[in-house]
Image (cartoon, rainbow, N blue to C red; front, side, top):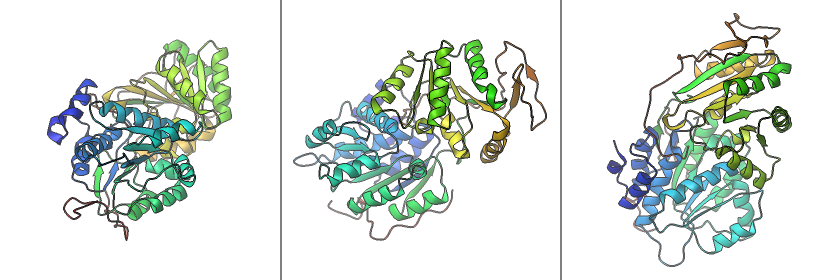
Length: 433
């Protein structure tokens, strides 16, 4: 299948072609026709499979085919959990709307609201927002979402994890009842299904990949090591492996700062991003990382989603997440859109239970190794073969998958019941908006 068969306009197809994409990803192939048919959707796909284009392209098509009369109003609202993801979605929207008369903008906290308000006053068609800033501007009467026709909840599971449930409920209360709802999530947890039941109307269920799976071309490596030796080991791996672009995850903000400082002292350009950093600092660090000016980016889970870094070769779990699903989101930063990548996890004795939880979630036993000179004092499993002093971790082919053509980025069960009183627009039922 090609994008030409999905019913998209020549203007959108031209923008897609200029991006170098020819074949839609599974989530795009399944979601785009459903959205164009003006149906609600509950979609699940792993990160890095083109979820953003999966909803962006059909929204652009719908809005461009039905231009409003008079002043522009917000017709499509995309809610997302983090600033980085919001900014990335805006970038994609603008790229795909290059040849359309569509205006879009983004609002999020951590920065001065005045430039955002000025853009909103000029009139826009698509708004990408984090829940907190959206509600803040609405309470100040600087924002009106009473004309929204299409609502997107992107990374809905992450929004619940970050405590946005009440904010989302407040936003639902001020949106028009008649609208099209698109809910995208990496997982279909019970909480997500409950949320969907209260928002979606007779939705189509779309699953491009099984729940909690990782990109096929990601190579997983687990290295057992004592907690106090992790700093020296990560320096060794990066230096001797000649890794030039590495994203490292820690569990805490303090840990991210401390590790970044350690890497700097070792002669590696490094920066840390987390919730205590200003938005400008986070944007600067991410931009430097993408451009190759910063070799190592150390992040907390705030960056597990929303970082779109083309061809990122290495992701390291300096500390395993205590929530198994977060492992999927973290390593989803590599192996994106058919490219290969490597996920390395440094695991000490106190993290063995976390490792077992991740393996249970993935239904996969991850290959475990020990680096010579960094042997853990306590080994939970049968000891794997040791590696030579200057040798990189051997790559296992057990977790390799098939290839694939580049996709536009973005990033079972019964259907949820429809929410009472929520009647989204349906072209076969409603004759006017």
